[in-house]
Length: 337
Image (cartoon, rainbow, N blue to C red; front, side, top):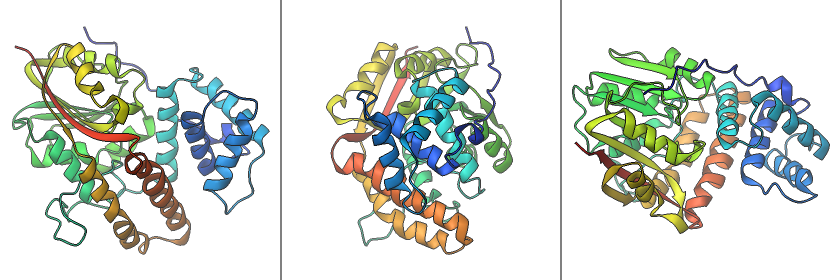
């Protein structure tokens, strides 16, 4: 049975995190997600993290970081919950970077060498979506989607969901996301026959049993509160013979984890592929893509986007793959029947 349709929570109000500004608040959320919670110097470490990421403004006091984190926990009602922290994080990203061209948030994928032609990049896609669209293409490639009912869980800003609707000709495509601001921007920026965007939680999919021919999720499972529960929900809403199509980062020490979790959910794993090299090739090309875009923006947004691409993506995320701590995997599984 489907979970009852949940009422979307109110988008995170950045005023709750004052005196931190919204960009500092976003890095606070990173600190709460990544930095160890134990130890008496926790808030000093978090404050140092914010100061290092945003050296153009006064460093926050550790007590301000502590008080903002407590206010956040009270507002979310889920202190320490990874899913709630990621929802708040993407709410803030949507607030800071609401531009219609910014509809792909994934790392992208590229098959070309450093100096060769780039056939996987679609020049029709806006912003940095050229390789983000290619990652969606690769992830969804194993399944025949024409005339199908497709669910994209953790659809973000909807660029990939809309690309599936446009290029694969499904009957319906539903994009589901836990960030209310993301859903609002998806509805603002993407329209197509059969395309719909809704609020929903990955571990409580608001859809009936056996209602989709394919469930897609690109670079979102690591944000979900419980990957196993999501996979069980995906298996529930898939029709017999339906396809699960995933791409995401995963700890290198547990590279067999996605296949093991999919099998535990009752799905038959068809293929798992390590696509880290192609993701890194996409990230290698990001500085040039970002420079091309940034030259068209006003000074204020330009600086914020420059930090986003250089620090959050080019340093923090790419560092996970370059260091070998994480691999980027593509998985195809099917529901028996």
